[in-house]
Image (cartoon, rainbow, N blue to C red; front, side, top):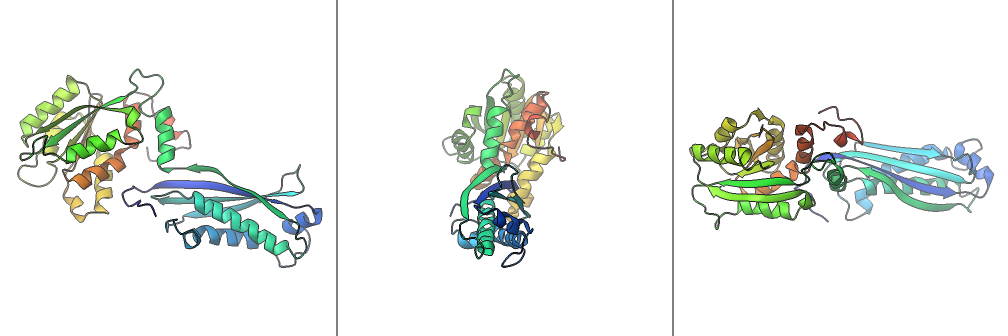
Length: 332
C-alpha cells in the first residue's frame, strides 16, 4: 500500500463506464422499466448497488486506501442507434490525498453485474463488455499535465525554466553540514517538474537580519531569480529573524502560501503552529520561507508545488485562464 500521508488534500474526480450488450430487445424494455422485471426495478437496484460498491472499494481491493467519498452518481443510457447496448457511467468525487478512479471503476462494474443479476432469469445471454476509465481530474498527473503545457511555461513568455535559489539560515551549520537545504535541492531535482526548474544558487548564511536582507535583495535585484526558498529561522527563538528580514524585502505579502504550509504541517506536527514563516513578492521574484526541519521543509514542497508555477503566469500577466481550463475556480 502506497504511503500518501505526505500528500496535501485536493479535489479528485473520476468517471468510469461499463457496457452491457443485450441480444433480445425485450430485455432492454425490462431494464428500462417498460416491461415487468423478474426481480423488481432494475435501474434503481443497480444504481444503489453501484453507489455502495464505490463507497466500499477499499473492502474488496486490498491496496486501495479508505477514503472519504463526497459524491457518487450512477447513470444509465441507451444509445438510439444501438438497441442492444446499455451504457453505465459512474462518477465519483472526493477531496483527499489519492485518486478515485478505482472507486468509479468498481461502481460501474458492480452496477453492471447487478443489472445482469436482476435480468438473468429472463435473459442469460447478456454480456458485460468493456469497463474503462473515461477521465479523471486532480492529483499529480493532472498537475504535471497542466505544468507541461502552461504554468510557468506559457508559450508567450521567453522564460521557459524557473530559476530557483535556496538560502539556508543557520548559525551552527556550514554547507557541508547542512541537510535541510540539501533536501530541498535534491527533492526539486528529482521531482516530476524537474525539467521546469533550475537550481542556480545555494548558500548557508548566519541568522543575521541585515545579512539575510542583503542576500535576498541581491538575489532578487541583481541575479533576478524567479523563486527563492529559504530554510530556517522561522520559529520564535531569539535568533529566528528570517520572517522579519523577508518582510523588509518584499513588496507584496502572499499570506495564502504561508497559511497553506502551516495548515499542512499542523496536521502532521503540532509544533507547526509556532512557525512564523512568510511568503511574498519582490518585483518578479517570489520568496517563500520554509521551516528549518528536514522533514517539515520536504513536506512544505509537497504543498508548494505545482501550484506555485501558476503564480508566475499570473505575475507575468497571463491571468488565471490557463489553470482554469478544466473549470472555473471561485477561490482565485
